[in-house]
Length: 61
Image (cartoon, rainbow, N blue to C red):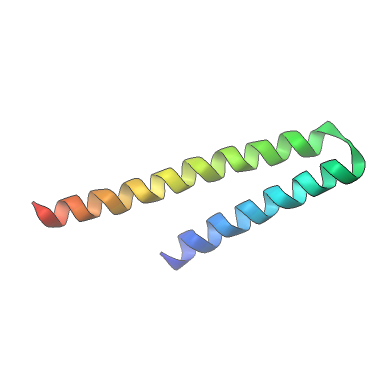
């Protein structure tokens, strides 16, 4: 649980850094990389919460 939270937090921090570099340099590469990181962070977060929900459902059955 702690590892997943740490990983998601670091990915979001990396995305913020990419967006800051985009603002500073105006190079579209940084914006694109930031969006890719955010997309995969959201997918990882959804997968993490899906596993938590499935664990709770397994305990109920």
